[in-house]
Amino acid sequence: MAEARKSPRKVLRYPAWIEVRPGVFSSCTVANVSVGGAQILLEEPVVLSTLFILWFTQTADLRRGCRVIWRKNDKVGVSFFKLKRTPPTAYPPATDVVLRQRA
Image (cartoon, rainbow, N blue to C red; front, side, top):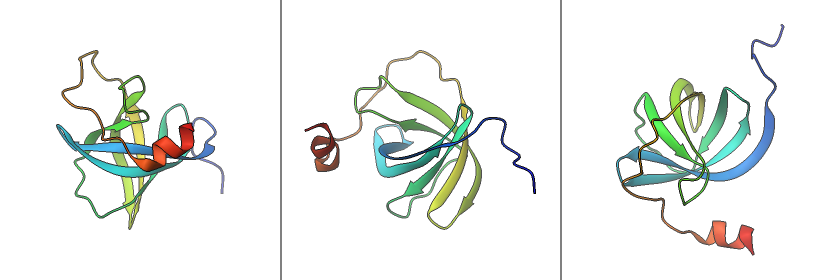
C-alpha cells in the first residue's frame, strides 16, 4: 500500500503540551512530525476538542494549531493549521522532564 502522506514524517519523541482549554494543559509526547501534522502520544486520558493548540515550548515560541484527524487509544493523529498571532493567555507549567532535557 502506498504512503498517503504529502510529506515524510520525522521521529521525535519530544515532550509537549496540549492546551485542552484556555489555561489548562495536558502533557504529551510528539512521536513524529511532518510539515503538515504529527502523531501525539497522550500521557493521561483527556477529552480533546477537534481543534486545540499544541505547545512545543513553554514560552509560546513554538506552538501549532491542531485538528484531530484520527484517534486510537492514547495516540492522536493531527494536521496543523495556522494560528492567529495573538498572545497566549497562559503558558504550560514547568516540569522536571523539560528541566532535565535542557540541563
